[in-house]
Image (spheres, helix red, strand yellow):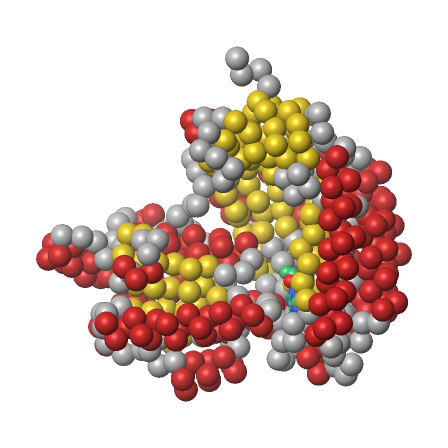
Length: 474
Ligand code: 5AD
Ligand code: SF4
């Protein structure tokens, strides 16, 4: 381990990493195998990216991965709390781990991520889940080596949660899930306080990374073989507002577009209220920026949108969509929709269906409203009955899915560049990959082609994916 490899706050972790590594080396010498970790990730891409850093640190410390939780010496859950069922799942898992620990007393159990940033959750964990060894939050992920070392030295549980975010810590080791595509955080936190959403309370205020740091990271990734990057932020459209001098997300895209060897740029998530004309032009003009935009609408009712604190109306959203489609005619749009927000009436819901019909999304993530303690919506009157919300949810899919099929039918017969990502679940002689517009395609191909961008003819529209065949591969 080379101390000079790391910069800033993360350097404080180097001695702890070394200490744990030695502890693991001694174990390996005695037992003829490495200690194993099992990392379970819930929730969004931001969490998935955090887990790559967790895994990066664990591997630096001499652990190796196992896919079997029962074989692990260190189990970590990177949690989500955006909806209640994610939390219930964690409590269920913790109960099971309690049993496992009885037969494996050396097992170390760690919990991190959004869920543990909530005080009520922490109280519950301290009260009823004392077998959890290490708890840390979203703001101090980089301290895992120190906390792990403290747990090993003391034999007692350690808990370190920061209520407030600190400075952004750069340069953590990271274990990328894919060799040819990578996620890059461009900002952390959220200032929007949509009334249903817990994220601003658990991820803190909006902070942007310096553009030079982001570009340097992308350049290093490209040197390492990455062809596609995904810029991540809760609200990428307000990137750079907290920097001095201010920069815009459009500027970041234009600079990134110049990086030689990089082929595709994606990003998420865009808040409709902050999507500027400057960004639309950048998307239209930068050839590496994919013609795919995730633009969560949440509801089609202007009244509900106001209650949600989204700060746009149905009409403004539709006008924005029209403007984007005019500037980028082959754009594919995806969205998030919440059904059953407090006070949602049948008429409000009809407005959501109307937006779905008018926009024509290629993908949509649909959610039943989930009450999150601490958010303004949790104490709103007129919470919608579960049965009513479920019934609307089903009707939403009945409108959404044929529309998705229709949007995709426009691609049948076309030959498009597809980044081959992995062996397909459809069969061992098939690969799956994505078009620029994020459409999933399964096509016959050899695993040696993974990581290449290939011309693939889309032959059959299966609504949520395509079957295709490579062109010019004799
Ligand atoms: N209930 C249901 N869905 C929610 N989301 C955020 N908070 C909630 C909630 N309390 C959805 C939104 C957001 C996506 C990431 O999760 O649609 O865009
Ligand atoms: Fe939550 Fe709204 Fe922020 Fe998205 S923009 S993370 S929905 S508060």
